[in-house]
Image (cartoon, rainbow, N blue to C red; front, side):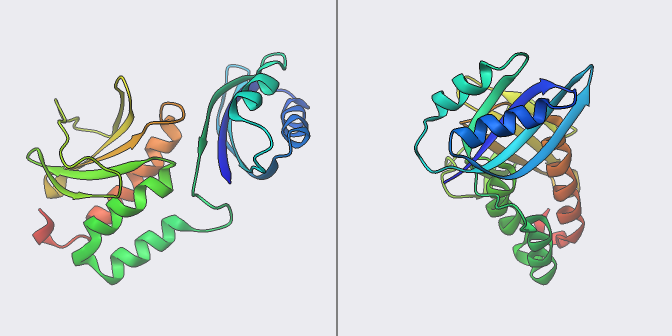
Length: 202
């Protein structure tokens, strides 16, 4: 089982090692650490771990949150296997079959972004939806630029594809609000795919 943990911790020598030791004591095998931000004396890191199932997510939160200055911002399942290159794989598929580019993008984004589902809207109509996405979605006040929103049940990324009159919505039910680093990455991917889409996608 792969999990992603988002941890906010003091940005000082040794703190990251303490978190790694605590995860190891819980039986987690750390596969990757991604630094999302470092500012004001703190760092926000995403840990991708292989989890044996011996400890619950609540135990993870309790163990790590008991460390001075450490906050667990989220624990959620992921399919993003470290060492793979899913961004490049997506772009290669779109370049090979640009007429299917929108569907390829929407189907790939949940795995790329640690989300549950995604869909593409045009004029309020769902043009394509990934597995688990709802058949319809009300996007009030579509943003002009990539943005995040939080509803009662979902954390959203909203990604305009202006050249094709579309908005791509990426939704996460578990885990924290999308970080700006995640938003920037997704927006760049969408921008490249948008440039590869044929004019008929508009």
